[in-house]
Every structure is written in structure tokens, then in C-alpha cells.
Length: 327
Image 1: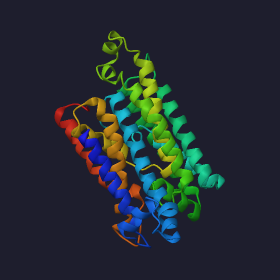
Image 2: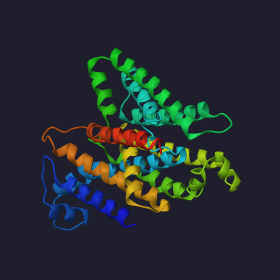
Image 3: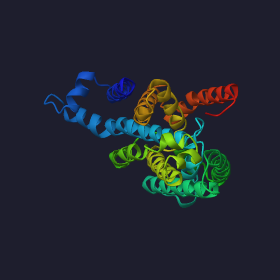
């Protein structure tokens, strides 16, 4: 519980700081006055904080929490710390549909978001069906997901190659993962998804410990392994799909947040909530850093999470090789 509260405090602090920095810097006192609805705030300050900066800052928390929770569910269900939505193909499915809509159809941002959501869900369903053979094992699910990711990534690369420079740039910005210019229309669906799916995930988390023992033992303990796994994976896919539709395929948050949470809490019952809190903190801090590291030039947050997340993946692979397993 302490670790979860600490992660939430870090996320909240990063959000408040991000509300005060930018082309129109504001002191912390003015930011808090606007947030608390104080009489001393000006119309300009209220517009900058509430309409321009708050959707992005709150979006970072919501998207990060959704990715963190989704990654925690996937890793525990497939019993593999290297698994996450961006590794097993969900983000690749969203990306290929989004790039197709931008490059071929010239679609706008709302159509791209809906297409990314549909692509993520359809890809996850295809991976699940391809992985079925007298049930679904985590090992087979990861292998199929990696293969599907490679295939879809090649299609995305082809679409970018045939696009003109302008549309290719648009698609590349979305593919890098960014929270810049996010509005309430893009943030509110993620908040609603979190409000609905977090309780669902906690409700479905009961069989997780049995699933981690293996399907045979889980069935011996009375757990309907296939139904439990399908429900949990569906929840994880929905979280990752909504987050990807809102901000693009931001890499490594879903991979890193559960790994950090596992090292902060010993109680498995708190691991999902802690993963969501850590994911929110990670993305909020990363987005703030992406805005200010090279100011006035702003980096897409997905670039920063990739730079920081790649060494973590290498470390996890090296550790798995050292101990002779992937869990």
C-alpha cells in the first residue's frame, strides 16, 4: 500500500508541475488556485491550465495507468515477465490500421483513434485464436504474438514507404507515441475505461494465483482456466487498445511498470493496482521530461520511453538467461 501511494504521489506531483511549465509559465500557487477554483485566477490562466494543459497531464496519468495494468495482467496470465501488449502484437495491430487510415484514406485523428482501437482488438483476437490448441499456453501466445508483430510491422513499413512525405510524417508522429495536443475528447474515454475495467480486473484477478501454477493444477483446484484466462486477457486488451488509440503505441510502459511494481510490493493482491500507479507515474514523469529536456523543442514521449525501456528489456533478457528461465 505504501508503494502504491508513493507512486500516486509522484504521478500527482509530475502532473501539477507539468501544468505550470510551457510557453506561458505559471507559478505553482496560480496553478493550484485554478485547480481549486479560487477567485484569484484570471480567465487566461484558467484557459491555459484547464483547456490546454490539464487534458494532456491527466491523459498521461490515465494512459500510463492503463498500460501498466494491461502489462501486469498479460505478464501474470502468460507467466512471462517479458510479455506486454507492445511485445505480443496488440500495439502492432493498432499501428497498422492507424497508418493505413492516414496513408491510404487520409483519415482524421478521431477516425485514426477508432481504427487503432479496432485494429488492436482484432489483432488480439487473431493471436488468441492462432494460439489455441487444446487451450492456450502463455509460451505459445507469446511466440504467436511475436510472429504477428513482425508481420504487421513489415506491413506498416511498406505503407510508410509508399506514402508521400506529408502523410508519412503524420503517421510517423502517431507511431512514435505522443501526448501533445490531447483534448478532453481523447482523454475522457481512457478515464472511463479505467473506471470500468480496473474493478473488473480486480474482480477477475482471483484465479491469477491458480493460473500461475499451471493449467492442470488450476483445474484441480476448481479454476476454469480457459475462461479465467480469456476474461483477463480481454480486459488487458481493452485497456491497451483504449490507451493506444488515445496516445499512440507508447512503448515499454506496459513492460516496465509491472516489473517495478513486483519489486515494490510482496503482496500479489496489490500488484495490479501498484502496476497501474507505477505506470501513471512513469508516463507522467516521462512526458514532463520529454517536454523540458530539449525545450523549446519537444520530444514525443514514446521516444523517451523507448530509450529508457530498451536497457530494461536487455537487463530482463540477461537476467532470464542467467537464471535459466523467463519468469
